Amino acid sequence: MTALLAPSTLARPRLPRWAPVVVAVAALAVAGLISLLFGWSWIALLVVAGLLYVFALPLWSRVLEGPRAATDRLMTHLVWGSFVVVCVPLLWLLILVVQKGAPVINGHFLTTSMRGVIGSMPGGILHALQGTIVVTLAASIIAVPIGLMTAIYLIEYGRGGRLARVITFLVDVMTGIPSIVAGLFALALLVMFFGPAFRAGIGGAIALALLMIPTVVRSAEEMLRLVPSDLREASYALGVPKWRTIVKVVLPTAIGGIVTGIVLAISRVIGETAPLLVTAGYNDSMNGNLFSGRMTTLPVYIFNQYKTPGATPLGAHAADPPGYARAWGAALVLIVIVMILNIIARIIGKIFAPRY
Amino acid sequence: MAKSIDITDLDIYYGDFKAVEGVNMTIKAKAVTAFIGPSGCGKSTFLRSLNRMHEVIPGARVEGKVTVDGQSLYDSAIDPVEVRRRIGMVFQRPNPFPTMSIYENVLAGNRLNAKRMPKATADTIVEKSLRGANLWNEVKDRLGKPGMGLSGGQQQRLCIARAIAVEPEVLLMDEPCSALDPISTAAIEDLIHELKSDYTIVIVTHNMQQAARVSDDTGFFNLKAAGQPGHLVEFNPTKTMFTTPDNPDTEAYISGRFG
Image (cartoon, rainbow over all chains, first blue to last red; front, side, top):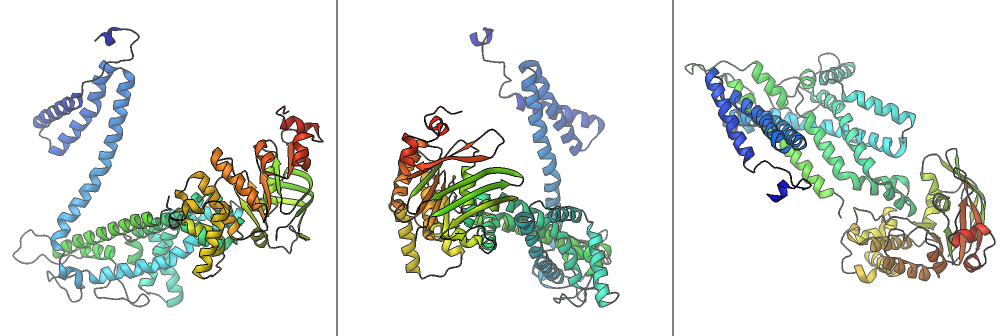
């Protein structure tokens, strides 16, 4: 206590350790009381309690600890609060999809198509799964080389010249292209060559590639920029030509980040619906041929199941039509695919990271 | 194998900025030539122009003549890649390739040029180069480990091993010891003494004792004034340079009465 009395002391009054707990309990109690009075739901209760907590503790702190500590507490609360606010919808979405989708998924669902399925007969997503994989793979085969080489040009050859600036600008514009416009463009392109009403997987692949290229260029560009010029010079000084330096020194050094960027670009476009709806169309049966016949992908499948869910079976009152359940199941599969892609990206990033 | 270098009326530019002006000198074969001078006077720039590394920087160019073995390096018929194969370089900061092991780093000059060689030959080159760089005993049991895992001094010697593995005729060193402790510096200075018998060595240094210790000839670069191009003030045998320099500016710089 002597430390507190001396005017020149370094010690300052602090809130007791248990202060946050007390304030949290009090906030919950007050919010509970209010929501009982007005008959609010528990969600409103939590929101009110959270807001009370965020502002009450800094207030107490201001009285006891002074303005600097109070600001510190308030800002900490706001940062944490934003984090929670971001996490809530994400978790909510995941829980909902798992809740609704998991019961539908079984061996049959994953291994049959919708061919000849009417009403509440058990159908499956195999054709859509196949379509998604084929179309996305084709899109990557088109987009990755173009994107990667553009990035190499921008960093290694363009070097802020006029052409490089124009390309960067166009890539930025491309980033903002609405996906449906990319779809219409791909459709128009194919119609020019194959006549009207042409629908095939390749159109979807072209549309998705258009959406992927800017992402790939941007991420690869950033990664290549991070490669220290020391390494390039070390390679040149050994008498290695520029192209070999790029292929053997620059790319391997940046490969982890580049692959991560590519996988993230893939997982970005794998959920696209609109461009595939106009280019690849919808189909109930298996179709592995990119160049002929309509091809279903998972997002389009989900859209279609929701649009034409089929009739609710007789006798099962108030149940959802069978299409809804299939749509949720397909949504869960899609999310799982995206998650797997993200995990793969992380693993690859780890494996190829420069060793120290 | 080691070659001498003749430089006549060399002007070096970064875009419109003239960085170095009117250099004339002859760098002797199988000898160590050191360049000293204040920061920003163009020593490194001049060194980089000797193996056409200068032009890697956008807008950089050179006027004048650099002749090695009767061939003018800046002739339009000359392939810069071939020049750099013959004239190796060690940089100020150690820069081993982070994706490669110690073994692969030493062989980088050969491997990156897609030279195929039997394992035995590769092993011989690695051992010879690492021994040449006084690093063999320290790393022989961990050749497969990443090159970035070595200490700073070891990394710099690894870079020297990498440079001599391609058997250049000239070795340029741009302040090779400035990032190192005195013990690593001593190791590299010993190494320079040994390498002298096979290579022409050109070294840029801020450390005048180092120039006095390792070099046979010394060049002193200086700026006339801030914003002016750097120029060669004096080029003489090291002994003369550090005892009876021709130019009063050189004496002022060497004795610490600079400016």
